[in-house]
Length: 262
Image (cartoon, rainbow, N blue to C red):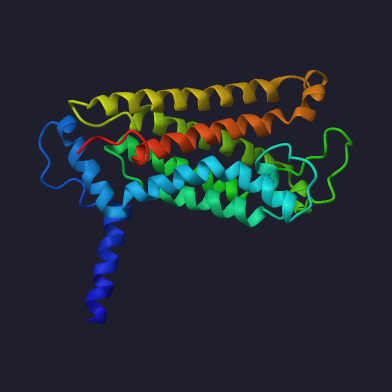
């Protein structure tokens, strides 16, 4: 009995991480297989529930970090970026959420090889974001490190912060790919609700790309031009907008909203 349970467990792992079970008895036309693949995805990992959880956490993630640091860490100000919450008492929450999302990305098979490659890379970039923290930033008004921040030796290795910044950008781009290209796939004869969902996915993806583009421009500008804006925490708010768009698209994908009529 015990041996059969262990064998069943490893078969499930092989199904999830090896992509097996998603390509059986499919027709010659890949476009006609989307519905079957979608059904199998839902069966393998209860994807509808997972998508809802990912969406809710995406919407609430910035708020959880801010309120947690205010209430539990006595931080009087919002951090300069979401990544900077690694250096607060919310470090475990930040790392835990990003790692959870990254592992889900690594297990997400999508519809074809391109989807699996992008989801795997997105998961890897996410793990790099979680495990290689950003450099600790000083308060833009006082020029000092806030007392509620936790010191981290990453400042002794500046390259870690650079790797984090690059990985964070690629992570957001990977998530934008999901909303723009993967989520919009589906039925060959989409329902009216599906057409509306596709528009929401595209809007969410474009919002994420716009936030990413603005941040790139912001980082590229000389300090003399951006110094006055730092007190408004533009990076934090742009990241928050991107997370809200990301979370909302996953809620829609999880059929929390605009579910097809049975």
